[in-house]
Length: 125
Image 1 (cartoon, one colour):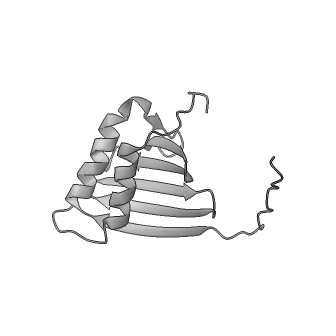
Image 2 (image 1 turned 60 degrees about the vertical axis):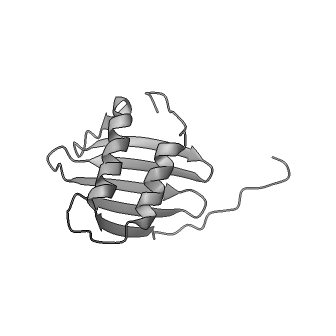
Image 3 (image 1 turned 120 degrees about the vertical axis):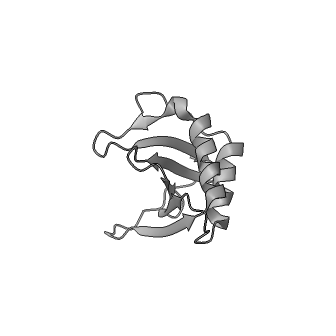
């Protein structure tokens, strides 16, 4: 369309993943706020039993999952898949009184989730 062709994606068995562990009560509280405000769209992964929220954004194009294991109440996981460069970021968010890790990146993403409407998928998607 418009004279643009899809560029071929290099076939590789490598997955570009960055993992961040953030122990911070304020970041955990921000994640809980997102969880509470979006609980009506909660899904359960039948394989792992984890509860998760799914967000899709068009600009920049990405997909975000916020996950929680019901047996582990002091932990959230957030996975971001960036479509443009096929990279992934994984954030492990812990509820701790002693801050650990750099919270700036995950805080920026969490605030974006709260302030930016995502694409809502139907139940069958």
